[in-house]
Length: 305
Image 1 (cartoon, rainbow, N blue to C red):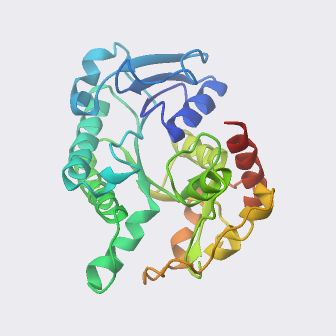
Image 2: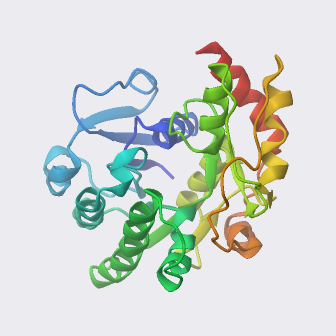
């Protein structure tokens, strides 16, 4: 890979990806929302060029970039990927349109491959639709929008002759993550001296350290692929409680968590969701960090900020 475009380039995953690409001597066009965004982590990296473009204006990207014939277009930008906007259907559905607009811009820029970020949350949507007795959360609208976007992009990219890859991310943790997901929430609460509360955690789950998922994203851009869908995870899923129970000792200082304080969500999880066999077969990907190793690095970071 010689050159790539990355939207959402100053986000959690975007920042790590731009650093990875730069370290591999890839010329990166980093697409940032506007000039008010913090780009201190990426602006001085070798081979990185900053381009400002709102998602709502992403169709104009080809007018803002002189170069053509990029190897990859990584579309990571998504409004409301965390927080209350996950439940805003207008915002979430607009993201689907913006993703298709990004694909059209990628075609105009003569990109060899369009790779878009998905989420493991997509997997639970069928459960919720089929069983109306299940409770719902703000994640659901977000997950539905992601799942719909994958379907639309698959057809749209095929119609315009643009190679397409949907990257379904597992639950990511690591330095710079302030999304409020389970690990981020737990460590944040413990740092404040609180006791984070969880369900019994009896469902299968998967946490993947940020640099491992970045390796997977890089390999999907670099490799000749046989599929348009890949799950990106650790390759070593466990029961959720087996992950959570390790957090107090990693945090130290008498840290405690409360398992069983929250009700189970009733959703049926499946270990097969978390298989990285296809990813390994097509790219050679193997995660380098155990959960224990990644957690130690994440704790070190959160104590320093």
